[in-house]
Structures are given as structure tokens and as C-alpha cells.
Length: 108
Image (cartoon, rainbow, N blue to C red; front, side, top):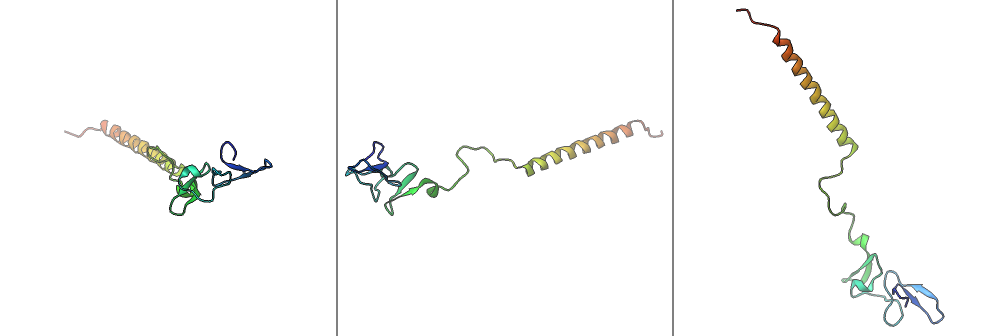
């Protein structure tokens, strides 16, 4: 076996990859696994079928580990910007309406 146990090396020095398994104690590539130590990097042992399977297949993309909130999309950014602009316009109108009423006095 190669030093990293990823290949089997025959008597002539010819190396053969053992992926998805590792090379066994007898110098031959394993054909089944008992633990993930019997599997090449990027694979894990599926004990129910005694086969090394890809990690990506075992854990579909879940979006990552530590995240607070979600990624904002351009669409949500645009909606937030529109809401802020609308709030500014409404506030400005209410200020103008208040000022217009300041100069008028009720007859008395």
C-alpha cells in the first residue's frame, strides 16, 4: 500500500487507486467498509450496505453552518429601498400640510 493507504502498490511498483476505499492490511484495496477509516477522504462508510459513499450524497447542501438571518436578494433590497423612499415622501407631505395650517387663524 502507499503511505496514505489510498493506493495499492504491486510487486512491480505499479500503483492503483483504491478510491472510494483505502488499501487494506494485505496490500489489496478493500471492497467493503466497517468504519469510515476504511474509506478514502471525501467518503464515509454506510454501515447498512458496508460501502463507502460520497459525503456530498450523504449530506445535501444545507446552506452552511453558522448563519444569522438569510441572504438578502436584490428583490428584497429593492423593496426595502422603495419603502424607505415612500416613508420619506409621506413624512415630507405631512410636514408641509402642518406648516400650511400654521399661518391661518380662526376668526374670533
